[in-house]
Length: 215
Image (cartoon, rainbow, N blue to C red; front, side, top):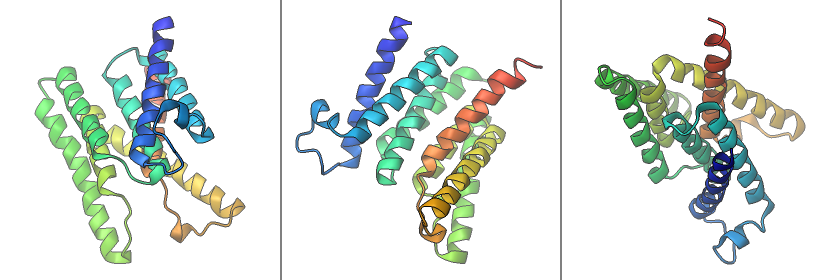
């Protein structure tokens, strides 16, 4: 338990540092942890990272799925902060997912990689189609890489389920903003990577606690 707590604290400190670094927050007069923690939003990010890291460690232990979820959460929080995700962490997630697929099923490794990129290809085609119809993005290029990574790690079906669950969460959030803050839905930009993280977490929780424990 002590090791899990210490690791979660390390993840929290590193996570808020990376969020501040990639968002290039102009409110930081000096780029240091002490300056970062003077802003309340980074304290919230720190608590979220620590809490979820501890829950994921108790849930999965220190393994590839834990790393995938933490990278996905980090990308989601950065997406919340600046509505963009860094290529460095995004491709690191892709590399971890490829490694996990290789270790998890060496016999079907090529198939899983092709299926994962197939998932990304489907969303890329939807992106092109949607842009041609309404001249607006439905999903970003970085999100397509994230979806390809998840397709490689968890399979096409689970990825589509995660996207569906994340889209439902995003829709509920958008309706909440429209009703209580009078935000125009047509002009609303959502951090979809964070909602992908929510959908993936809900799907994994369903698979772990409902299906596997009640076969």
